Image 1 (tube, rainbow, N blue to C red):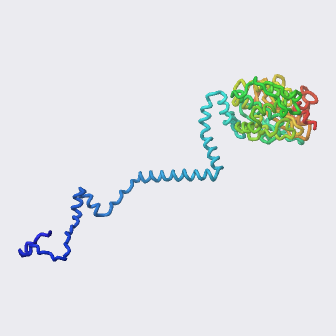
Image 2 (cartoon, rainbow, N blue to C red; image 1 turned 180 degrees about the vertical axis):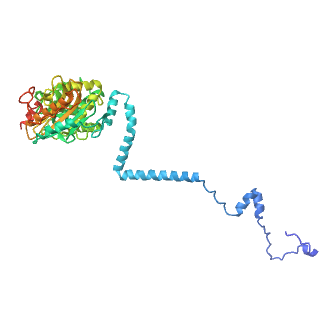
Image 3 (tube, rainbow, N blue to C red; image 1 turned 90 degrees about the vertical axis):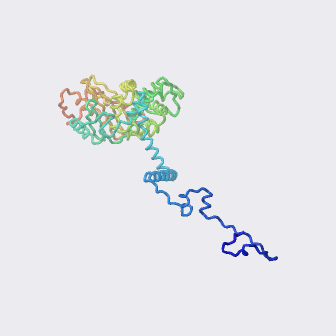
Length: 435
């Protein structure tokens, strides 16, 4: 009950009796002051001010933390955007995969260098065709005197369209007369097929003694004697490769094409070497001339094989040995002198005649040469043109002094006394030419 006031009269401190109907008054309890409530909660003085006032402002982020958060946000947005773009643009995704594979290629090549085959495969990517570098073999400058001589020869055959490419393997000098033009390959396509075969031999993918079965779809008319054997006959891989080159056997060629994975796989291999024109489009005999190459690429293949850049030394020796035993028409061979050695491969169609190979002279010079001639169907003057080109090149490299030989054929071409009369058409395509 409330205390009596000090100034109240004594009578006032006494309680007077309440009326009978009066409602008793309940004492009013007031909430303790805020400060007293905080004391009961043991809240420090500094925090009391926070309770009474608004929450304090956040401390600003440092520039480092702000940049870090922005970076994380940017990476997340980029990942999401990249995912959507890869879904909406498959071509871009494929391009990214190709770039990734290209970036990882040096690592793969370094690991592959542990084996000699892989060393050869590394050099495939180093070969730069159509430029001034040939797998480390610099093509320096043109042999102007020899080019003039060969140009004079070509001009005397107005009815023919020759392409010539020659490389001096000692100095890197070269001759280019329409050498980069595209020609029907005919049987010269068998050279890159042979190189691919021995690459797989070096890699252990093919054994020389393994037996290959001649299937009905392999049998081809034209050159070779395998076409006369029954389907199902088996031959060793080395025998098949040898027949493909020495007697230009078309059936043997088709057997090797299948064993090497088919035309598309071989074309991819050719591109990996750096060849831009050489393409296998159809099996042999390819009378229509759909398989393609150029004199420059054929000469460069011979130069690189001779250096042993694409195959191991033993396989290189086998390639040159096989090509040194060809039994086809002596086109380049007819223009060489005594003591010269030739490893070559001819190609014959009704509208094309070609020969390419590696020449070693008695004076120690060696050069790669490829001559391809477009002609009217069966025109025999193409044979004479190749003979004269071979003769002029051989004379140039057989002269002991640096003085170039006098250009020949300033007058009408004369047959060589060592050249057989009635030069035969390459047996490889003789049947195909009689259509």
